[in-house]
Image (cartoon, rainbow over the protein chains, first blue to last red):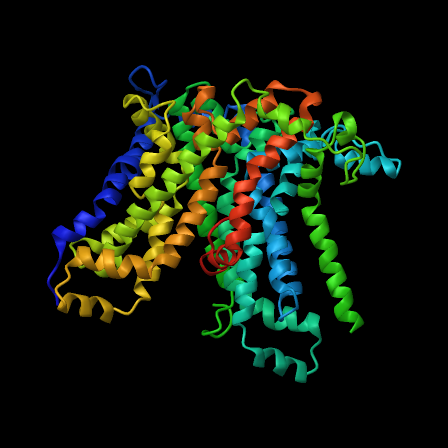
Length: 296
Length: 274
């Protein structure tokens, strides 16, 4: 049975291999090369050495987009994870109607990435939107949240937090795996629901928390549609919602500075890789693997 | 007893808060004129279909066209992913071949790649081929199994099928092609359905790719049309915009209602983003 089936195997792999060469491996090397050039799509790339990367430090839009994206990631990821954990804890334990609750809380996540929902958000947080109407009932005259630089980014954070459904589902599945005996033993020892959650559930969920943090980190760095739609493609007001990916799009596909956009893309890849590695590196201090003795 | 009751009350309140924006959008699409700006109430004082009638044709090209374009792309993407990913997955899960480990590692690595490091060269390639402003850049890659995630999902699924089935078929004289077509494909139907559902939803909601590759309004998809609507109209057309936005959510919502169980299971067991 050690016989290899090369010809037939490569026949099955052929479409994927073609895709790998033409659409993944080729382009990743291509964009690395282009990141060292000036390229406007129509004329041949001109070698520019490290110019694109040097320009980062003196490009106020780029620095600003980094700041905006960092705030977005650092504020929304912990909030999404916390919301997902709390909801999963409330829903776990064989509650009646679990299926319906689960679906209802998950629904925003499956619709949230669409242009339609971003348009809705824009109206809700607009000058005469839903939020301000409600505030007016309490005698507060709210600003136009989406066009005030200090607040605009937080409307996007809120839109992200609203979509805590996927990590919640993952946590729920994880909680189901926790042996009932552990909870019973803790109850016998006199632990209440809150204590059981922090001392039993939470430690056993830490591997999934790490998993969700990494997924959410990657997804938030790549967020694009809401910032584009809510700011009308500008990243405004005053660059306050200029996500890194939005600026990359503007440079590459509106201004056709594709060499610069490629350098930005590589910087993004490195940032995402580093933050993923960073998350894993801290994990030895707080992730608990049940088959080992405590955090490693 | 009261404790359980109060938790349910809390949960239902939470559901209302979570779903209120969506309900409010739907109700806004039936409100006339300025009523959208006047109140958080869901029930329109005078429900009207005017927003749907006027919004449908507001861009000159009817929304029927845009829905058609989105549907063509989404259906083709589903076909591409199901065929090409299942072929690759079968090879990885069941066949022996040279460099298998290397290719498998390459496939896993490709899942993590942000599209941004690929988009400029891909765009250049499609530009050279004269494919800009056609659906091809959005469809052809799916037939080349670029969504490695689904390959991984299917590999995991095929590995859970008993290999004795393959052996029995082999003894009966089936080659790898027959085993794939007659044994593996029918048995992996659940994985194929999951792939189809998520491919459809993500393609339907995709914005970045469509924004980059499609320019002519005749080829606009629903998300691009909504964006154009937003750019071209002011406060007066919010009702119409919400009407078209509501319509655009219906296919995904329908998928969700029909396949709820499979979608939530898909997320919770594999961490599919959603």
